Length: 101
Image 1: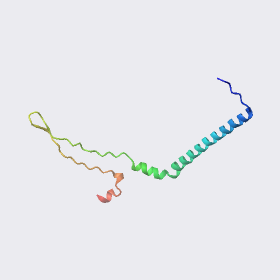
Image 2 (image 1 turned 180 degrees about the vertical axis):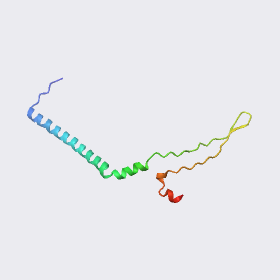
Image 3 (image 1 turned 90 degrees about the horizontal axis):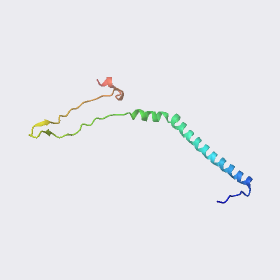
């Protein structure tokens, strides 16, 4: 491996310094863009995303499994399907709950 000797060390140092400044400026600009976007989302769009989060609560909807009839080896019915219905009202989801009673 041969050793490379710089022909003009001052010029090489100046080029390296320019590249460091350009790279640093680019990183700084990207950080500023990210901070502006963060401020936009958290300050200006706070109410919009807060409403979306409230509407995006976990809502568990039970789905009853469809099963067939279960017989033993002698043909005696062991288990059958009995439809069961239940109604659940979430008071915070109904606007005028007292009016409808």
